[in-house]
Length: 555
Image (tube, rainbow, N blue to C red; front, side, top):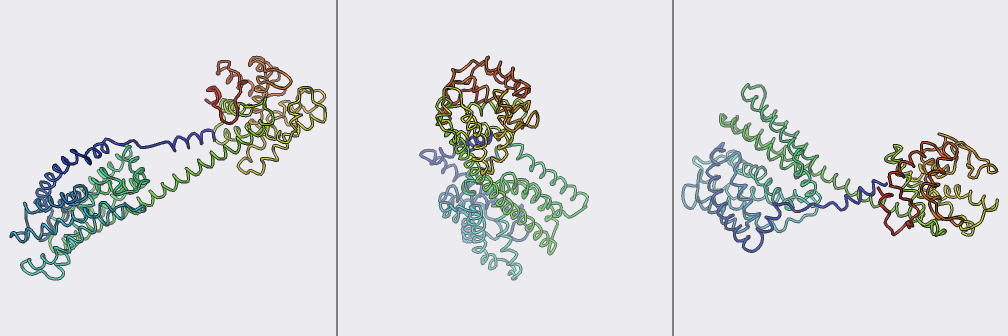
């Protein structure tokens, strides 16, 4: 957990800095910036509606119905960002360029009013878009579906009454859904992407905004679905040239970039790529419908709108599901980090309890743990093994909690009985931690950290005999590391019976016992690590809690 806790700390501090777009938006929302924004917005909206309303003729497929009506997207954006100023600008813009059934001043005003409803409803609801869950569904319903539906319903009676010859029920049905779907497609493909770029918080909850911004901030990730769209567009073009397959079947491949974006950037990314995919598809569909009439045209319209609905549905379902999954994973990761940090504190508290019994060894287990990790890295340990090594090093003396203080702090030589009590600290330490499942892998390292490389256990002939008789590679590598590092730190630290020795003296002792008490390879690694620290010794007082470690032990 050396690296895990650091990673958790870094991730918890990671914040998104305001973008240039957000800085500009803040200026535009206050004082003179606000007045200038409204003025420019009204002019741009009026001009945009006027031009796009006239351009809607290019997308007309039957009567006054267009496959996509771009002016509707401008109307929705005007209602969202300019509110009632925008509503007025939309009405004027439609009045300036009438077409279709708008042949008299009264008809012009009526159809302009019906179209301006697409700005009125967003202006009314923009301040109320605060759903905590599935905000994008609320946004699309309130800003895309409801305004275009209401506009079509209001215009329907006029379409029926003013048409010459009189519309049949079937024709009225087609006209209504043509008006509604043409406007809805424009809002979904043109307005929603703009809102996502300028005010993603209107469409997405905070966690989804974070995911979306992360996706936008990676050009390589954004480029991949764009390339896929180009490939599918070329395939549709070839299909039109050679009449190989139906374009609508080839267009279904546009689901691939939409789903790709959904699993990379959530619903925000999916809606953006859906917009690009939809526009590429619409370009090809308009070319087909220019040569269709009657039922053939109706079939083309049905297939076109069905594909577009599937695209949006896939973007919403997969994007929302993936965004929710990402949120849950992040929350689980935060909880995991918290558990790791709390577990670290528990382990550290246990180690501190040992040091509290012997003030002269204060900081000993912390130094041993840091140096053991450095030696472990030198010997190729990584990941969970390195984490368990650190825990074992921190807790290798935890059994001393059961040793009386007068024995731990005794200045003179220990009696045979006192020595037996000291030697029991290994068994006691294992018994203390063996009920903690997560520390299970560290138990052998603690149990065997007193073993000798040569396997000697004769207390009469050896100053530091082993306890269990293991030798060589029978002793876990982590236990061998702790044995060498523990000895080095003990020599370079004050003890009740002697003063601290120099680092050179400690290394001489380790070399003298290499192949006997210690693993020669571990001794060589200790020497390399210590020499890389410029001869700094570890006898400085390093309390286990509340003090900063020297740089050389925290690298």
